[in-house]
Length: 321
Image (cartoon, rainbow, N blue to C red):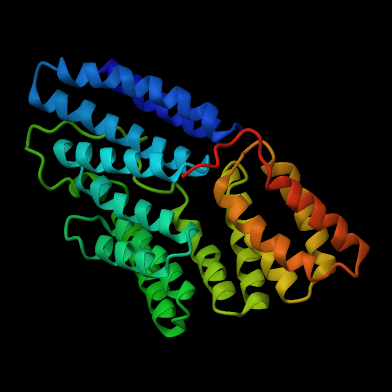
């Protein structure tokens, strides 16, 4: 169907815009598409077509939840996530429904709630309807929660499990995401290939998430080395993820005393992240500001501290939630 293909491609374009514009600007466009897809799903002539529209709508809502989170509005993000789950279940897109638990774990991560991160991610990993790709993402998120709680051995086990699941997901390919829609009828229409559940860069997350965890486990030098390796594999176009882990890299370098290396990393990051208005990146900036404040004896660190503090005041973002 032309309209389904149109909306699927439009979501791809919105995702590209999200790497160049503030989340509030993108969210307005996503909301307009959601308003159009609702009536189309209700007017569908067959159950199969209706499910396809509902699935599209669920993917748009999932993206809206991410943009709301990036804008710093946790309450709106939670509402979008809940709507995604409901629509995905109705459409039979159970892999996407399972992924909403990972999204909830992500919200908890930036709130510093290790218990909820681990519980949500572990539940996503236990879901039998989930695809290997979703299970891999769940294991990565669980590892982050365990690291936040200081459980080094369990974190390492979760990272190992994520790596094994990634290999399984790569072997099966994107077709497995369709097979994960176990509840759809035989008449279900195929999912457009552009609709991918979760991060499009799952295969690049091993070193990045491993480094993230090492920082929380008190091993900043190892964390910085791992993240630097992961960033070298990450596509340049994925600016939000790159900015988030670059901020984490700066944290690792500062905590391990590599202050000369912090300066060029932050120079590029502050410039690149300005247009993104990313709440997730600002959570890292807050920790980085505290770290730099302890090194005010160096003039270059005082200047960096002032710039990082200024970056926390983002006029283009919502701060409620």
